[in-house]
Image (tube, rainbow, N blue to C red; front, side, top):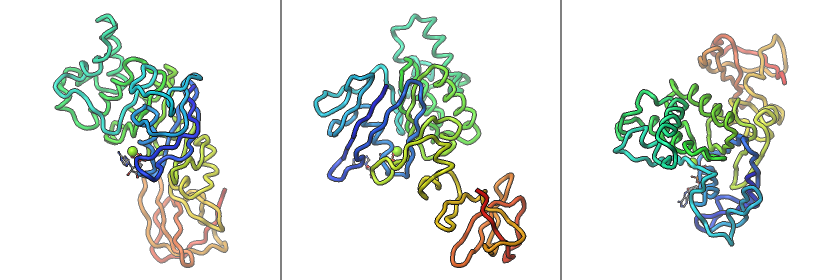
Length: 303
Ligand code: ADP
Ligand code: MG
């Protein structure tokens, strides 16, 4: 449905995106991950048509929407974009902001739609509050609801939950992503938070060095991260005999040829993360209880 072909883009001389190609199907959830500065926001902005100095092309249902020979129109009906820095109308209420672009709806229909969206982003209790009085996280949710108001076919979300506190984040994420799936709205989500990806994304792309490093399902990449960059996105890991071993894949056994000395145990909730010295390196593994400092343990990888 959305097809990106050989997209190359630079703000000045050095490209920020080099030869990026991928496709998104109807209702598909694609995550774009990468370190800060890797070009995630730039990619979304380019797709939305904010820049015109690009090479390559973008097709929407077989029609070219971006490319050197196309005039750019920002803001299609089928595509909505929620920026990292959202821009709302501060002096009107939450419900007025969300309903702002629903003028073609009948009043009752509009009211119903706005109420439904406020429920999705969990803002019903502040419906009548002026946006300028809201917290950053609440504003982010208003921006999200407003972008969803006209039922786009694809939505571009830039770190959509970054301003939202941990108390709300989990349930809000489920609510929003469930809503998108139910309504068959495709999404491209730029994030550096694995919680935005696991359990939700159908596919993920890792951006590195201005290029797509890998593009696969989260499950395949988790099981076979190939590079340290991808593994680091999923959690703590070690490189042992040139293989990537997650901390939970390293176990304490009675005897092995991996002898380590405990440095510190970190409480992590249902386990402790133990840091230990192994020859001239440190390794990380999980343990059900904290281990005494300077004690020796034998480790075995279980993959
Ligand atoms: P991310 O969202 O992954 O953190 P960005 O897309 O914001 O990364 O930035 C990618 C690179 O482009 C960075 O090196 C950043 O400094 C640069 N950049 C971003 N916006 C601009 C801009 N408006 N002008 C020039 N350089 C920019
Ligand atoms: Mg960004």
